[in-house]
Each structure stands twice: as C-alpha cells, then as structure tokens.
Amino acid sequence: MHTPELLDLAQKRLLATYRPQPIVAAHGRGAELFDVAGNRYLDFCAGVAVCCLGHAHPELARTISEQAARLIQVSNYFYNEENILLADELCGVTGFDRAFFCNSGAEANEAVLKLARRHFHGTGETDRVRVICFERAFHGRTMATVTMGGTEAYRVGFGPPLGGIEHVPYGDLEAVRAKMGPDVAAIHVEPVQGEGGVLPAPPGFLSGLRVIADEYGALLTMDEVQTGIARSGKMLAAEHFDVRADAVALAKGLGGGFPIGAMLVREALAESLPTGTHGSTFGGNPLASAAARTVLRVVCEEGLMERAAARGQRLGAGLAAVAARYPTLCRGERGLGLLRALVLQDQVQARDLLGPAREQGLLVTAAGASALRFTPPLVITDAEVDEAVAKLDATLRIHSAAHGGP
Image 1 (tube, one colour):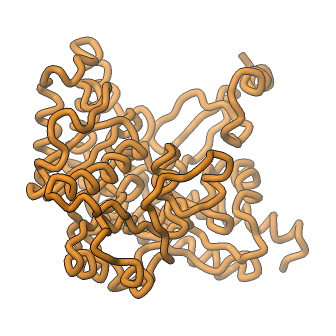
Image 2 (cartoon, helix red, strand yellow; image 1 turned 90 degrees about the vertical axis):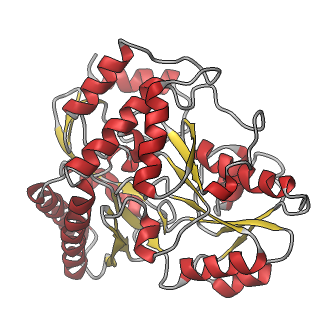
C-alpha cells in the first residue's frame, strides 16, 4: 500500500495515544531508515535509544532468526540456557550480582519499586514503603510508573495515584534530605533525565544521594532504561559519577530493538523477592535473551562503548556550534555520550522543529518542551554525525528565516 492509504488506515484502526510523524517506515540499514515511498532518513532517534546496533544489524538478525527456529518461549516454570547465560554476562559487564528479566522499562521500574518495599517487609521494617522520586522524571506508563514519574500531565484522568511516592526537584540534595525519614524505602533516580530534557545529574548529586540513602538505611535505585548498555559512553551512566546503586532498571538498548527489560541487584538484595512474589510470563524468554546476548557481545567486541564516547563528543561539539550560530533559537547543548540534546530558547517548541528536520532527512525526537533529543545508533560513523549536524543547521536556518531571524 502507498503512504496515504496506510496513514488513512492507521487513523481508522489505531488508538490515537501517540502523535507519530506522517511517514511509514519500511526498512533500515545501520543509521539509515527508509519509508514505504523510498525516502531516506538519517535516524537519530533509533527507536528512542533502543536500536543501539542500528537497523538490520546482520548478527542480531541472524541470532533472532536462528533462535526463533530453535525455541522462543518456555515460561519461567523451566530454565532456559540463553537466559542463564545472559544473566551471567549482564552481571559480568555491570558489576551487579543477580538479574530479573521482564519485557520493558516500565516493568523493570515496577520491579525495582516492588523490590524496595518487599525488601524492608522481609527485614521486619514494614513501615518502610515511601519512595523519593524526582520532578520531570520518566519511568514508564503503567499506573505505578506514571506515579513514580515527575510529570503531572501523565497522571491526569487516571484516578488516585499510587500512594507513598513523593517528588522533589532533580539535583536538590537538601530537598531530598528534607523528605527523608525512617519510612523511606528507596530513592529512585535517573543518572540522566532523558524524557525530562536530557539533563545529566549535577556534580555531586548522585554521590550525595548515595550518602543520604546510606545514612537513613534506605536503598538507592536507578533507572538506566535510556542511559544503559553503553549509550552514555560507559556500560552504565552511573559509572561517570563513580556511584553504585543497590538496584538498576534496564531495557531499551539491551535488546537492540527486541523487547526486553531487566532489573539488576546487589547480592545483599538477592532474597528480597522470594519465590512467588513477582514474575513476568515472557520475561527471560530464550528469544529475547539470545538477542540481548548478541547485543552485549557486539557492544564489547566492536568497542561501541568507546565509540559512543567519541562520537558523542563529536555530536556534542557539532550541536554546540549550531547553537552558537542561532542564538535566538538555541541556548546550547547537553548530554552524555550518544544521548544528547540541542537546548532551545523557551519560546521555541521542540515539537515544532520535528517536521522541518524530517523534511531535511533527519529524524529526532523532542525531550520536554524545549529540547531536541539525539539518540543515534552506537554504530554511527563520523560522517553520519557530520551529516546530521549539517541537516540540523539547514533546519534551523530555514526556520529562522521563516520567523524573521538573522
């Protein structure tokens, strides 16, 4: 079918829970995405930090095909080899000790919440149920995770929120300390707030949270759904800040495009979710596990963590140069590794630039109201980074001219 017919069918059959751009993706290759009309785009969205190996990576495609021909699902009533090996390899590259597998970042964050509360139930501290979260945070779209998230608009219309979740400004240690007490089970934080505008933790913030959590006997848990699996230039973004969490939520890049989520914990929490207290029907299935094992192997063998750091610096420098050329539109750039944002002036809406960028052949996303987010595949090349920056420059030049800019 052609694009107009497909878009009409989408309008008829899909719930309007999203606001997709008017293209219909057909196939991809690395950082390139092609629509059904044959148009080429440079994909600096990559499934929102999901397709870390790019589109149609031959090793990942081969793994998924071969594993699907062997075994897809057996349920958690039985072990499967791929999942056992993934747990060992994932713990090995992250420094954690135990793994629980699910299907998404929201599930992983819910698992972290349940772990924190059940841990203290098991120690007899049954009043420890409160969790400190942060304004502008994003942890998922389930009832629990929209409560954990710090954006009120995502909670409107869904009835009473889950109790025991409180929010404080991101980066404000004194605000955290003011909320602490003997009933706090955990502080839950993103090392970089992705959906909130690509905001890296201020210096000393994460280490300060570690001190506060330890002082009050609470857990420090992290959401690395968007930052994990080498996106920041480290396997986990918390490594940039030299801070260890007690538990971490992962998803997105872990499967390279195949749905998988994980919660990793320290050995001290190994008994915190005893048999029967939590589960996931598809969690840890052989197909997802095989895909994730291939992602980890390619990331490590091909040096994609180091590439994310180097290409991230190149992209950051390019974004900073563009921002300097259009000061009436831009304030600067920020981010870590290949999670970057062009920060816009308050009067400029990021969403208003998505279409013009697409017309230049560049796909990006909005993060908050005034940040354009860049999350290209980790296999991105220097030439593709430079091409993206040039397309962005053209986008802003046309936008500036159309709105009376210099």
